Image (cartoon, rainbow, N blue to C red; front, side):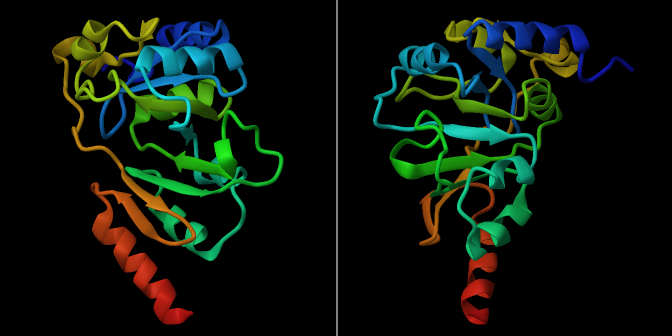
Length: 207
């Protein structure tokens, strides 16, 4: 069986990211676009190719919960909901002091830990964190296959594994559940709505 995380492709993706480029990659929800968070020109380019307004922040995808929680102010709800990572959940929460504004505009940071193995391999190869958004122009449907990601022409490199090269396997197609903390408000419905509601109800009952 071929390696699910081809080193050459990951090395190429890392080279593109270091050069300020945009990489398209699969997640368990929809295809995404990624840049390095500490490369200001790359962040500007991500907004430009996406056609996204500067006042609409993108999320920080992280290799694990620890890397995500290091960017956030400690909170009981955040700790509880982080148990659902890795998975299709984005938590918008107050950032720790000193977090760069490119990562936490307005003092808030959107955190996600994907479960797709190739997305996680890319994050590990790239230092643990990437600024990410869905692979589409703002207002348009996101890419669900490698072929769609390539066809949009938004990325300098499209990262695929053997399953994508073989048959263009689609991802799930439903974007992540997005929750605003500390309020516990669901900003966007998604696959983990019921699990989020159960955890928040348990917190409230115990508090």
